[in-house]
Image 1 (cartoon, rainbow, N blue to C red):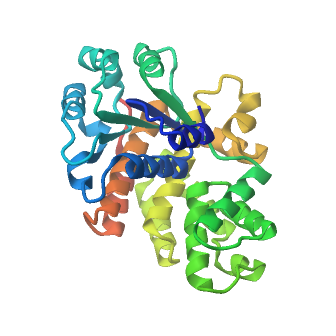
Image 2: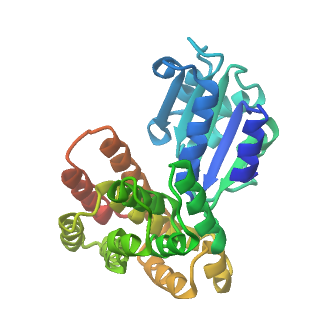
Length: 329
């Protein structure tokens, strides 16, 4: 099932006991979680009946324990587990829970990337619940998606301007949404024009710096990585945007290892051939293990930035040091 199918089911009032959200489009995943929250959680009951947790910090037993907690003020609880560890899917306690999930809890497992559908746990989830694949729309459909997002915010985004925004954000919905919010703040009650889009969207030099930053991480050069980071921050780049762009690039590198026929790399990654070539070159500096570790570090930074747990610069610098210096054992 894709994002459209999920929305259709939810509109019909169909909610599964278990969801597995996976793919590379985090913006749509966040929208899906928000939709479930609005559907299931009573106003004022979020503190009691809603939890969103980092799966890397949880055991299978603790997840099952939380899933079996009864709702307090809503008819259902909503439990979101982001990036659960591989061990959880092999654990007998978790596998047994999948056979008989709690009727009053909606458990959502969120995986940033692809999945192995041959695993026993994944097969059980597909039988007991729903698996939803989130991927960015391509080409003209991406621009039209931006038009729909703008309309939801109360603005008209002409197709030409939507395509400009799509190109500037490298077809990343989360980044495009952030740029759209920036544009809306600037125009106020006025129209969104080409000149405004050109003026406000980030230029290609930011993407170039992100490539250089990932190269520095892969080559174990933390001092260079931090120099590039400080340059981006000094330019006014938002810390969360830097995290999102870094994560996107590392996800692409991770997917290189999942594509057997490298001739299909561009189409499988959903990028242009020259971008696929750069990603393939960068993948030589990483292994699947080091990319996973890097993504986990960025996930921690993302959560801490959103909850105000430290200064953005120090959190990002510490993450870059950790990613650069960690080696595969």
